Amino acid sequence: MSNEIVDFSLLDIKVPAFVSTYSIETQKDIYEYLKQMDENNKKAYLIALDHLGSSFNIFRSNGFKNWKNKNL
Image (tube, rainbow, N blue to C red; front, side, top):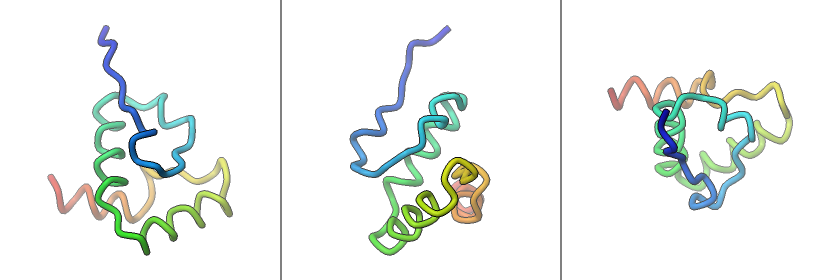
């Protein structure tokens, strides 16, 4: 088993704790997605996270899915 971790604290943006339960590959994808966000997308992400709380799932969000499809 790998001890590899993704350090989301380097992004200076809130990330739900449950993201750490995803595979390391998915965590890396989410990290890269969040890293490339402009300020407007970060604001929208934070609003969604705040308003939806634990029901918000970045992995299933339209923004992440669109980014993933463009970056395959």
